[in-house]
Amino acid sequence: MTKADPIRFGKYLLLDKIATGGMAELYEAKITGIQGFEKLIAIKRILPHLASEEDLVTSFIDEAKLAALLHHQNIVQIYDFGRIEDSYYIAMEYLLGKDLRMVMRKASLKGKPLRLESTLLIVSRICAALEYSHGLKDFQGKPLNIIHRDISPANVLITYDGNVKIVDFGIAKAATQSHLTQSGMIKGKVAYMSPEQAAGETIDHRSDIFSTGIILYELATGVPMFQGDTLQVLNLVRDAKFTPADQLKPELPAKFHEILDRALAKEREARYQSAGDMLADIEELMYQMSARTSPRRVADYMKILFEEEIAVEKTGMLELEPGPGVDRGTLPLELPHKAEAPEDVKQEAGIFEREAKGVEGEAKPKRRGMLYAAAAAVVIVLGLVFTLVAKQKPGPVPERQATVSTTESPAEKVASPTPPPASVPAASKAPEPGLAKFEEGMAALKLGRFAEATKSLEEALTTNPSLLDKASKPYSQALRGEAAAVTATDPSKAKELLVKAVGLDPRNVEGLSQLASLCLREKDYPKAIETYEKVAKIDAKRADALFNLGYAYAVTKDYSKAEQAYSKVVELAPPYQDEALFNLAMVQVKLGKRDQSVKNLERAIQVNPKNEGAKQYLETLKKGA
Image (cartoon, rainbow, N blue to C red):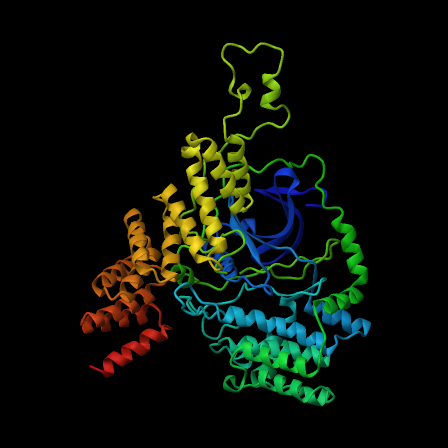
């Protein structure tokens, strides 16, 4: 594909291929819409010949699910996920800039190292992103314990306007994943691993902190912390053997060396226990130094380093118009099979089965600049969140509607001097009242502008109530999308919107699950139970709803019903069956069924030998026997 020959990919135009890895290919792309709406994005698409490989597709889906959990200013944002024909894809944020590896390389070539103030700012932004991702919780307040596992200069993007973005959570893991990495398997770049990661041991969030310390060391000293061939580096990393920074840069502040020593401690217990603690010390050092730095200063530095590249890339940006013959009409009015809004955090957290694989290999040189996107938020920009698993059902798809021709309006036909025939064709009739607003709403819905879609569809129904049959499902979907966008900031409004959405489409399990999940989060347990019961009646195999129903019953001390719900989940055998068995065992203890509890804990450990909670609880029960 060339720049002059873009390819239509659903609602996107693929403009240029950036890179191809072992599993996926990355494209510079553009989304187009009505009235000339255009937005540059990145499309990561699974390779066509791998589309039938179930394990790889699941891995790709896991990557999208994990990316969707993360919504932070210092983490590259995912916009959309779906499948077009047989091809799964992730649509991501398009950013112009260079990764930190290229920045360090160019700084060395030009002899213009980063000032310490800017180094501290960049690393502080990495810490902020890690503090957010490490501390992310589900709607029940349970920590997800996400670990990036590959914090390295190649995965830190510095944009030309001075912002810092962590990219590629493709091999990140959450502690709630059922299928853990095989013992001894090492993932990530060796020279930026923690000692425990290089040794193939079980890691936690402190591994990311060590990797961040390596970046801080190399930015400040200008030399690699570990050097040699892969095996040599691996051994050095395992033993944490490197030249102390105070021997290379003794002139740096004592506080800086204290931060570095603590971040790079070999033993995890001696290391920073959170990225937030490291961030606090860096900010204290910046205050002591009276460091007046900002993204603008970093942007000025980037412009000095990459002056030639920026000039070329700006020229390329002017050439983004598609070649002749490329369709730029309105989007098709039916919705793609894309995820709705958060249905259930337990399933979302528990179903991370495999480590996702990112696009590998170097990005090829190109005129439009480097395109960076991360694959990994409880609610994302388009409201396309946790229902991304292939096993789940797609959202409702409104009926396809014919678009109105823009070449000759219905009004012009009515004004024609030619007398109309006795039977006037539909195209020649006056527009149906409210139809224009209906189509505006549908177009906005396609672009993920949910509040706008809600307003237009509501106006259409106010003008013409007879459109209700046609508009109820898309209107409900728009309400759910709008609710997803405001859940974190205004849960009361989100709940109001969801109640209205469910009223319009009362048998839509996605909408009901979204409402129930919000009620659970807000501790409105009676409403959550009522709504999850409705989901269970509509779809008795909805394991996620049954799991959360069991939780709601348990926290309200209705242990008999909690036992029934968890027992059904166990029978359905979802990927998080061990957690259902664990919770079932806990409520059975409350019911005095100690022997059954022990048996279920043993089953949980058999299903997932890494379930430490089940092991500890079983040991407690046996000690008390």
